[in-house]
Image 1 (cartoon, rainbow, N blue to C red):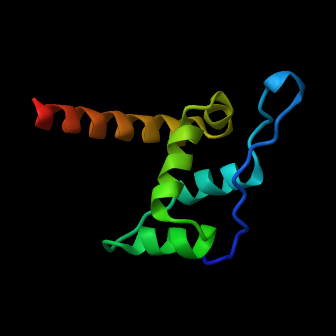
Image 2: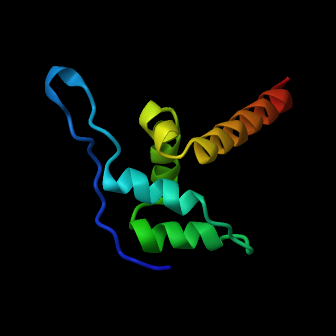
Length: 98
């Protein structure tokens, strides 16, 4: 599954400062996160190939995305899993600092 996708940084702003529903890029990110990778570094290579953005930026976008209610409505199980994983990683980092 390799497709070149244009890098769309912005969200569509509606009158009154509201943000529109999920963009196509947002939906592609969520679909991408449903996948599994067997080898170290494979996911990172796919991120660069599919989205054409740095891996760090991809994860910034993903973290912003899973905090949005629209993402949870679009794919509740996936977003719940991603939030749990993020919380687990945050707890592990906190424990190492103590």
